[in-house]
Image 1 (tube, helix red, strand yellow):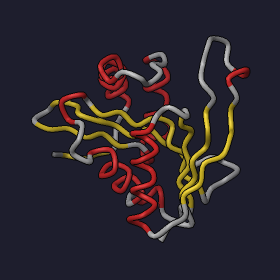
Image 2: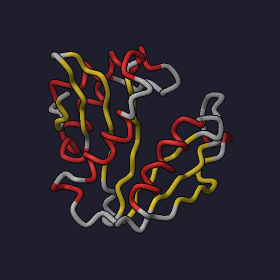
Image 3: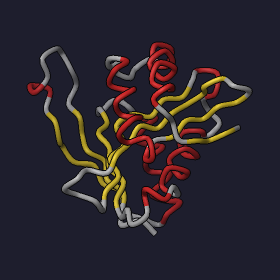
Amino acid sequence: MILRAPTERDGARVWRLLARTGGLERNTCYAYVLLFSDFGETCLLAEQDGELLGFVLSYRPPNRREELFVWQIGVAPEARGRGLGTRMLEAVLGQPACHGVQYLTATVSPDNEASRRMFAAVARRRGAAFSSTARFGAALFAEPHLDEDQVRIGPLQ
C-alpha cells in the first residue's frame, strides 16, 4: 500500500471513486482538482497496485491554523474493515504541512457511526479528548440534508 499526497491529476480519480463509496456527497470534479491544487499537502491518497483505494481530503483553515479540518474520507468498498481510514488520518497528521496541528475536526451526520468510531479511535490512540457538538443544521442546505455535527479531537499528543 502506498500513501501519498495527491496532485491535480488525481481529482478525476477521486471523483470516480466517490461514486462507489456510497454515503459521501459527490462534488464536482473541479472541486477535487482545485482542492488538490491548493491543499494537496494536507490531503492523502491510498493506492495498491495502481488502484485508488482511499483518500483523505483536509485543509488547515486560514483563521484556525492549529486545526486540521477533514472534509471527506473515502474508502473503496473492497478495502473496508481494515483500518485504512484511521491509517490515512494518522499519515496526514504526520505530513510536514500538518506540523503544529493541535486539533483534528470534521463534520459528521448523526447517523454516520462508522466515521464517529474512526475519529474516536484516533482520539484514543493519541490520548486526546473527543467531543461532538452541533455545527450545521439541516435548514442551511438547499436540498434535504441531515444535520452535520462537528467532531473535535485534541489537543493532539
